[in-house]
Image (cartoon, rainbow over the protein chains, first blue to last red):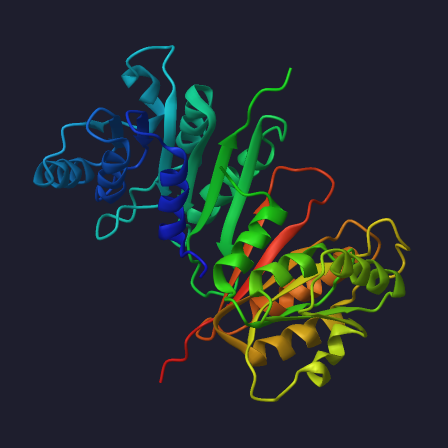
Length: 191
Length: 191
């Protein structure tokens, strides 16, 4: 059976992230991906979860607490600044997830934007382990969504095919701008 | 790790086709997918393998013989006519694969074309089992390839989302028109 978008996003993350790794939820929102990542990396792993919205931070903190997780840092800041929250400059990131768009059931005018998304992607690519993935779930039906979608696609399409595989996974017979996935895999360097 | 195109095509077929089913290789070409399907359905299954080119038929027959497979019918006819090779009108097809383009190392002017491809897709969808897949590997770098690609995409994009999931799986940062996958899944009817 074909995986739906959210299921496929989790499948990709789960199949590449190892126990004990440090991983990024760049847009923690309702916290569901944060909790998922927390389970994937295990008690000795670490999840850095970012959001610019107080409501998202609060919801995620509550969810993490309810599940008694101690391996998550919920950070009220833009993912654009994620580098300053990394413990060392030598560390490797095991994987990362983005959900582009707005926080469900919240203010639709607060949305991710292309410039900070692209900046965060570039930072993560720098620290990403070989064969690691950035999984981006692109929602774009809202106002401003098309522009972000176009800009992010344009950016990832020009990533060197020697250094990265960039996959688009999308259902093409659905109405109402269904979300799709972009997955960026860091390839082994060949000298 | 992200599956490459050919690997993902096989993964999809293998994950939905069951032993003993009847399946279709709509464009047998060098016979590799035919052999793969033959192994997936097992000795009591059946593969109907079509091609319009004598060279493809000969290569596929040889490959099947070399592997002592007895569950394959290699048919020198267009997939457009596949209905007449089905044993009964009540049968179910377990899955199907297409490789659109020309036969590698052969005459590049002999190519699949949109009209017969679409006709064969529609016939297979009629007989396809619930949750079964048609997997289409779209090569389009050759002369005439763009037109077929556009026409096939246009056709599958308008398939009802209540009846089918239509997935596109493609690498978007590669040069030279790399092949991509279209996968059509027949959904359970809801009454």
